[in-house]
Amino acid sequence: MIDIINYDKNNIFAKILEGKIPSKKIFENEYVFAFEDINPQAPIHVLIIPKMPFCSFADFLKRANQDFMSCFFKSFDDISSKLNLVDGYRLITNVGKFGGQEVPHLHFHLLSGKIIGKMVSG
Ligand code: AMP
Image 1 (cartoon, rainbow, N blue to C red):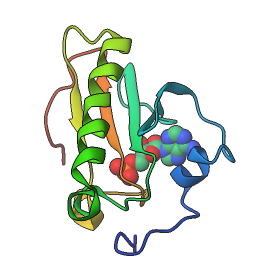
Image 2: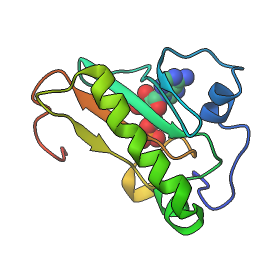
Image 3: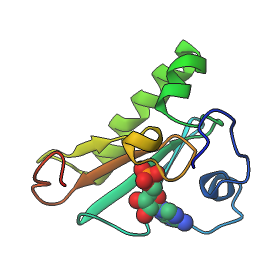
C-alpha cells in the first residue's frame, strides 16, 4: 500500500525534480514544477508539484510554512495564465488510499481543454 506518512525520496516525481527522469515541462519557478501527465485524461492534463518533499496534500497542510504555501499556490495563477485557461479548468489532488493516490509526492492534476464532466465516476 502507498506510504504517505514517510516521504519516499525515490518516488518518481522526486526523480523528475532531480532531472533523473525526463518530463515535459510546462512551468517552473523556485517553488513549483509543472509538467504533462504521461497518461492524459483531457486535452490539457498537467501535474503541479512542490519543489519540497511533501507526501500528500495532508502532509503539506501539516508541515508547509505559510510563505511556502502562499508562493506555491500563487504559482498556479502563473501556470493557468501561461496555458491561457480562459474557459476554466479542474484541479484535483488525491490523498492516500481512499483518494486513489498513486505517487507519494504531493501533486495537483490540472485538467482542461474540454468540459471535464462528472466529478466522480464509478
Ligand atoms: P495519482 O493517482 O493522483 O497519484 O496520479 C499520478 C499521476 O502521475 C497519474 O495521472 C500518472 O499518469 C502520472 N504519472 C506517473 N508517472 C509519470 C511520469 N513519469 N511522468 C508524468 N506523469 C506521470
